[in-house]
Length: 252
Image (cartoon, rainbow, N blue to C red; front, side, top):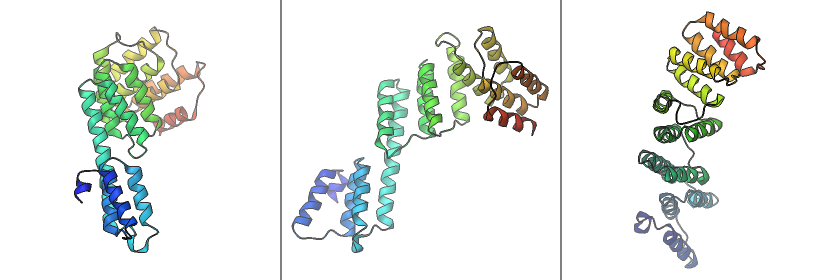
């Protein structure tokens, strides 16, 4: 167990192989110790392989304790990734932060979660790198993560700090800003950015109007919802299912 405690997984594996070569049959405790050694060293693929080795052996089938060891290792590794990502972000070590995020994703054993989402968003937002912030925002949405109120507060602070100086406006940027301030019930800012969008002749799309319909319906401004629908009808915007669902919810 001392070898396991020192996280020397290769030495643990060597001892396991020596036992077998000496004709000694590993017990469930030996296998569980091997699982722990791999897990604590971040070698989760090998930890899972060790559990798989246990299953065909009747006297060594993994029990609740073995699975608990594996589960704890998974949680610790995930926590470690998030801690390093958050720490690097706060220290403005953005390259190191992104490298750790890449390692996390490629590990296959620890997926980004909402904490990761918010740490990355805050790091790039506070550094004035709204392009990178938006890139990762989109990436996280694609893997199924959804922002919470903390995410939107981070975005609001980022855009307020950046103003219009640090990034070139696009419809993606504008839609994200409108959605962000809409979630915060800041209709005045939503309309301000919508006006700027039109002034800059940036073409709006169904995502823009879906956000507006949601904001106005939530605030009880049905007349403004009607007005936005007329604007869409008089434009060349092609309506899609998400927009139609948004309208149904507004009038429902």
